[in-house]
Image 1: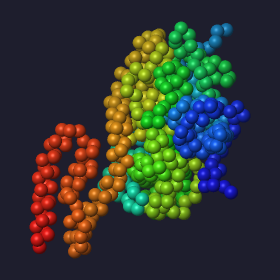
Image 2 (image 1 turned 90 degrees about the horizontal axis):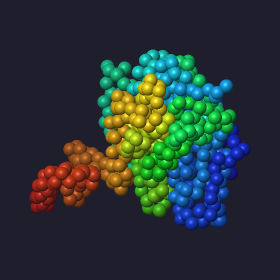
Image 3 (image 1 turned 120 degrees about the vertical axis):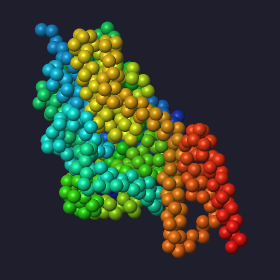
Image 4 (image 1 turned 60 degrees about the vertical axis):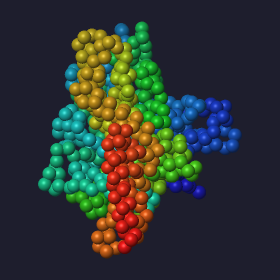
Length: 91
Length: 460
């Protein structure tokens, strides 16, 4: 079943970049207490499955919140290549 | 043949970049504008309204030509404080005689406006490369001499970094670091479809006019954490924009998913009636900086300048569009000045703050930085501000009702008069000692009187 957030994300147009633009240093996440990326990301792309952070680059809104909020600098985040990624029609 | 060296590369075709490119192209310089989206504006989110201070100077007839949504006259801008079950609206004065007014605001969609604005720069002679991400800077002898893209290197005498809050140019040049949670807020925004006539009826507007509502409210974390956040509801031609802005340090303490903050706003009875019947068109998120730089030396270096969000140019209210344009224009004037001298080293580009000052951005940035420091220092007080104001307003309105004979038995339970309450709850927590010490004797006397009156009332 789709969550309310899924319905929101369905309104967006993406051109997914085959090259991932987010990399996570998982060993740092093990020590992380609150895991702020799991609640701060507006698209909820980061999920803690008990052992590691599972993430998906394709629905990224390119806001950079995860990068700013990560207390351990475990998230290597850069922009997707030119022309790829989210495309706001009503930004 | 030697590689072509442009006069200037502007990274980012947002308000700052396009303003800089437009001005440079008008000066007859060879300027390249880079945009990572397929079209300028498609990576941007407008988290407020367009204040056309600088735009009017750059393009005097923009009202007829730019893709604007609605004109927001002075007096259609209202501020509210929200608690779970109440709303306190600040009074506004709407003067119909003068609302063609000197400074109306406009609502715009970035995807339309930025594309139009970049086109103005192209029409003036700038070269625009879309779908081109500046991934790194090119260096020579400690000077920035261009940018590296997937399509190869582009060389220029100077680079203007106008690439937003997550600025590659700022970070690669060593001028800035990645934003910290206290410096930025996350905006989540949704566009809600609603017919134009319904909007005009509901918000009491004449055709083409828009309204802007700013809400300050509270986030309640599941862990007991509490913080202030802001929402805005404003009108486009046939849609509404509802935003929720959460400072990332508030997000850290409250641990509430940011889209849930937006949903909590949708459910608030006051906002729910405003957006009744509207359907979701698009969901968006963006970071805005609101710290301002503390030192203008962080804005320029050998062969590089920062403008717009990359240089943290916003007003103390977080309005970014016109400070961006003003800083872009100042950067363009600095580049022109450096071209005339034929030198692009840090010492020549140090004229940037002087040009910023002419645009009024130096004073504005200092104010932004001060206000940011104040807000961070008073986070605890700000978290309760809406509830405190609503509590005081509730007491005041009950006092008014008593004039009509509505009994108000709780009156006796207050330890202070309403003035005393305002002092203790609003003034004391956020004022410096010299204000508290001046007011303290007056409040003390007032409290004595209040206690006397209460005793007198008890005897009756």
